[in-house]
Amino acid sequence: TSTFNVSVEMAAGFGGFNLLKQADGDAANKVAEGTAFDVTVNYVLPNEAGTFTGWQAPGTLNPDNKTGTTTMKAELGKAVAYPGTFPAGTKITLSEDPASASPAANGYTWGEPVFTVGETKTDTFTVEDQKATAVTLTNTATLTPVPPNPEPNPNPNPNPNPDPNPNPNPAAPSPTTSSPSPAASSPSPRPGNSLASTGASV
Image (cartoon, rainbow, N blue to C red; front, side, top):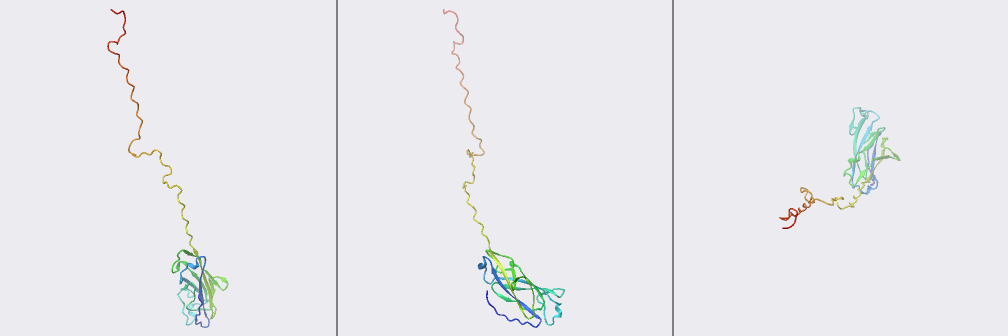
C-alpha cells in the first residue's frame, strides 16, 4: 500500500469517504501493479436532493430525488478519496464486480470483495458531518489449480487383443482343406482270365 494525503473541502453538514484497496490470498503477489476495479456507490439521502442548497447529486439521481448511483475507480495498493461530498446522514452502500478488474486475472481468480469500516466487515455506512469515513476493500486472489498430467498408457499397443490369425486379404475366402483324391480302382482282370477254368485239359 501507499500512504496518501488528500484535502477535500467539506462544508458544514456534508461529509465523504475514502477507499483503500488491497489484495489477499496465495496469488496476491501475482496481481499486476496498477490493477483497478469499478466500485459502485449507491446512496440514500436523508432528504430530497433539492433541499440541499448548492449541492449537486453525483451520478444518476432516481425519480424519487432521494436515491441514486455513482461509480469510482479503486486501484490496488492505493487509497483514493471519493471526489465529492454527500449530505450528513446519507446512507452509502458499496459494491464491486471482480470481473471489472483491469488487467484481467491471469493464472488466478478473484474471490468476493470484502468491505471493512473500522473493525467491522460491512459494505454500508452513514456519512458523518465534515468527516471522511475510511473504508478498506479487500479482494482475495487464489491461484488457479493446474490439472495433473494424464497417466501414460501402460499398453502401447493400440489393439490390446489382436486377432491371432489375421486374414491379410479380407476379400479373399479363407483357405480350406482339400479332400483326398478317391482311391484308384482295382485293376481289371487280364484278358482270358475272366472265367474260372473247369474240366480237364485236352
